[in-house]
Amino acid sequence: MAWEIRYSRRLLYTDTLAVVGSVFGAQILWVKVHAWLVREPAIANAAQPFATVYSIGLVALWLGFLSFFGSRDSRSLGVGFTEFRRVLQASFSAFGTLAVIVYLFNLQLARGYFFIALPIGLLLLLGTRRAWRSWLCEQRKAGEFSHKVVLVGSAGSVTHIARELNRRPQAGFVVLGACVPSGQESSEEMGPEVPIIGDFDHLMATVETVGADTVIITSSDELSPPRIRELSWKLEPGQQHLIVAPNLTDIGGPRIHTRPVAGLPLIHVETPRFSGGKTHTKRIFDVVASSLMLLVLLPAMGAIAGAIKLRSPGPVLFRQPRVGKNGRPFHMLKFRSMVPDAEAHLERLRAEADAGNDILFKMKDDPRITPVGRILRRYSLDELPQLFNVLSGEMSLIGPRPPLRSEVEEYERHVHRRFLVKPGITGLWQVSGRSNLSWEESVRLDLYYVENWTLTGDLVILLRTAQAVLARDGAY
Image: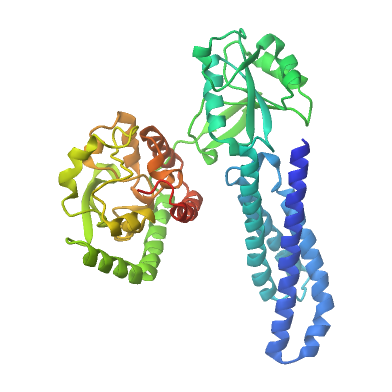
């Protein structure tokens, strides 16, 4: 596709600039620093030609590994962590290969050269990739730089897939229409998300007419394996793509593995695990990170406590019973952001709660919030005392929202799966809309996290939390 080639070239240009800048910058810096340390400027001039040869080799090796690992593959651009993971894999592999070459041929290359070039290069590569991704997502929201899709399947399945793709335009799929068995399903069956543009018998003609480059097969009993195989033969190689959407929802990519068995592409879905080494590593990370954050934030927390005490009568901290892992109750700490008798006014205000939140009480202009509390909530500063809950093991830095007992009593049975992990100070719910989310969306995000959490995903959520706090969207 023309847009894929254009975008890949832009990534290549910025990758080249990042790699060349970091490698030659490291060369100049290290040679000059070394010459200054030994107080022999002539050494710097003599070392420059040899260092330049090594730098040219490292640039070629680094860019080659970025291409070899598919870091500019269009299927990994715009969404997910695959693009960034491939950049990291390619970078560490390039430096690992260089280290082996230096050792085998006994080359005189200083270790400091590695220590400067690698971190600077990674920061530049990941930073430029992040900037390009933001630009790409904005373009895709406008319908550009996206695959043009025809959905094929039953009325219910194409409607579901269309709704999900339209909800995430940054994924890069623009739904042009759907081909359904008879081509005449009613609008009540289909909904407004996707128009019917054809039937199964005239699928290829429809694809050509609307100019689609991707066919997504959702599900239908009338699409037999031989018929799907024939469809794949008719698509233009390299220009048109076939995607089969399995009946799996809210399953993280690392849990899905495809393997051919007897000519069948079987999909293996790993069951989630809630114990073992990964859980212990998460606990160690929680303790270390929360301890460091408390050391850094203690002066600010002291200032907040003083502001609360001066501007409003009552205690500084608010201790509220919540339900934690395995349904065990605990007292969650927060800086008090409401008047002291806020709980007494709750029932009176429930009738005025924002629509769409039958279980969670949410109110944008809650009259119980104090002036200081409004500022604390806007920037999520009232949550800082929960770092002590993390240290005590009652909470984690990342996890589902800790609910009230009254909320738990209204849960449907499947929602109780959120108690398989510790509740968190932040989580997918906070970085995906916070209080703007409906109850169904909040539950879906919490359960997705419970089933698919990874340490890498936790780090990404922490970074996105800082962005969400600064944006202040949904904070009230």
